[in-house]
Length: 192
Image (cartoon, rainbow, N blue to C red; front, side, top):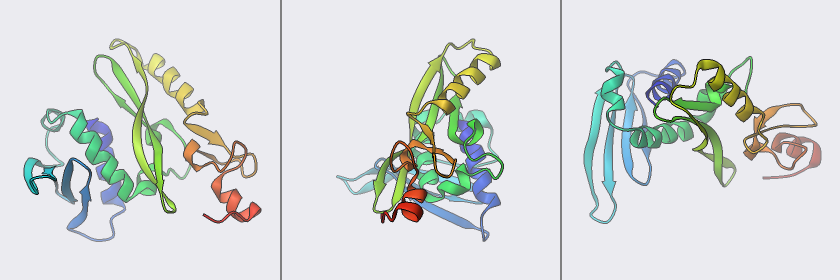
């Protein structure tokens, strides 16, 4: 999870318009902020109206230091960051749907592969989340992992191709089985 988190952080910094404080974020369990130098996360107790520090570290910290915090916290923070600037993190000018942008591989026993998916819609924008697509044996080689990621990228449960504009999109962006939300608006008069 650390590698996905670090990559997201670097992409956010690269696309930042200013210097210093970048974003506050909040989930059901955590709140915090990310700046160009560090991240701070606090656990939130809504009943008591209290927060307590979970961690504070520079993004130059050793990966092991951040990994020791646990994948649950990193997943929560990653999802919060993803929902703040999804297309900065997900878009790739040459290939919009690819394993580097849409899949997160967590080395462990077993190796777990997560997909970034639309978990829900809030008014007219998606709420992104992670869902586990598959697990592989800890000793799986890179070919086996590549086969698994290719299979996930072709799985209609997670991704689809619009028949009208040929865009390869997350399944949550399809209006129907045959066309995407963009084509629904521009070609079929659908208003969201």
